[in-house]
Structure formats: structure tokens, C-alpha cells
Length: 336
Ligand code: GLU
Image (tube, rainbow, N blue to C red):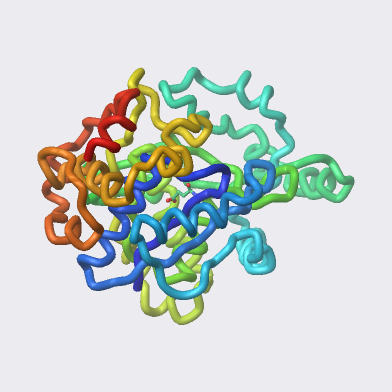
């Protein structure tokens, strides 16, 4: 059993990535577990050449170790194909011929994060006339594949879990999430599917990541149960009762000075830029430890020092409060 780093190599790591990885490392090590490194390079159009090596180099520079071989999703297509076939044979997925514009037009207005619950157009086609859907697939019509989740308010679609930072969570799969795409029309497998499957197959039991993925966790818990129920995971299906899920912790986000989440496209706070300006690894770790709520003021420290003060209760005390990183944080880091 282990924790995991699951970076997408779409650019250089920034302060927010270092913060989340530090928390994942601390959590696993406090449990006496190690951390696996999984490079999430499945979304080919988003991948930046060289980012995989930068990530490994930056993690090593920060002192955030991992164990075992690096797993790369781009090399696991045959595993995904096999499991996709299991879901298809079990009737858990269906082809969707809708364009994005059609989905947007048919959807109710959504909350602030622009998450769109699929209105179900092709689910009805699949339920009412599966032969026609199959014929359209055979005819080569462009399609993605969606996961058929329980309907809104259905009892088996209510997912409850306890987050170590945000506490008790309750999601209605049909109402809050809907039938997500697990295989895109360009043939690439989607995040929710591969991440759930890989976490299961890699024996990950400690998942730490940003709070933007809280809702995804509900879906992943449900999908994990479906995978186990259909025998995916072999011996794990016996070891993990469907009710056994990994422990989850979602973190407040690091925002820039204007309150927007730090992103890889803002190059000024990426680790390459920070390192080029002379920022030291122990300043980054200390700043991230402060952002996690582990220490009262940022001060340089190594990961072992951070481990000595790590306590989820302190992180929890920050609940709901994202951390604003000021524009002149580099000055602060250099002064540490
Ligand atoms: N590759 C995903 C990301 O970088 C990982 C999310 C997760 O931890 O599941 O956002």
C-alpha cells in the first residue's frame, strides 16, 4: 500500500504542485508507506516535451522521494483497453455521438466551475434502441464512450466519504456528476477512468490532491466499486471489499495575487524560474509547509523537519481557506 504523486507533464511544476506533492509525501511517510510516481501523460495533446524529466528532477531537488519504477500512463494502453472491454461487456458504458455544442445547448446552467452534467441524450438512445447505437458505431460515426452512472437521486448513486481535510462529503452521481466520458472521440482514455484504475492496480490507499477534485473522488469511489465487482484487480477484488476505499485528503488551493489558482502556464512561479533566481529547496519546502498550516511563519526546512510537524489537524484548521501567493513571493523565498 502506498501514496502517490500523479503529475501531468503539461509543463514545469509550480509552487502549487510542490505544495500538493509535499502533502502527499508527508501523509504517506507518516503512515509508514512510500510514494509511487505515476506520470499522467495520457492526454497527448497537453503533454510538453521534457516535462517528465523536469518533474523527476524537481521532486528529487525538493527531497520528495518515490519508490519503485515510474509508471507512465502512455505505456498502459493495453491495460486500459482490456478493462474498457470489461466495462463495455458489462453494459456500463455507452457510445455518445453528441458534439460539445449540443451538450452545452441541452444542459442546465451550471455552477461556477463550469462542470456540465451530461443531459443524457445518447443514454436514452442506448436504453431505447441499442441496435441503432451499435449500427452508428459500426458505420464509423464519431463517438466517445460514457460511463452510465445511476440516475439523479437514485440510492445507489449516493456516494458518501470522509475527507481528512474537508470532512463528510455527499454527492449524488446522477445529479452532481452525470455520465462522464471515459474514452474520448479521439480514442484517448479520460482522466477519471485511468486514474481510478491505476490507483486500484497500483495498490494506492492514500490519495492527497487539490480540493478541485473533491467531486471527482465521489465518481472514482463508485467506479472503483464497479471495477472490483467485475473482477478487475484480480486478488485485489478479494482483498478490497467494495466499501474499502483509499483514504482521501483534499487540499485548499494556492492562488495567485488576484485569487486565481496557480497554473503551469504562469511561468513566473514554476520551479525552473524559482531555481534560476537562486531560490533554495528548503525555502520552497518551508513555504509549502507554512501554506499547509504546519508552521506559523515560513522558514526554511527539509522534508524530514516538515514530517516532524505534520498533522492533518493543522491542515484541517485551514479548511476552505485557499492560500494567496503574493506577486513578490520570490523576494520572500530568496530572503528565507
Ligand atoms: N494528473 C492529475 C493532475 O495533475 C492528477 C489528479 C489526481 O491526483 O488524481 O491534476
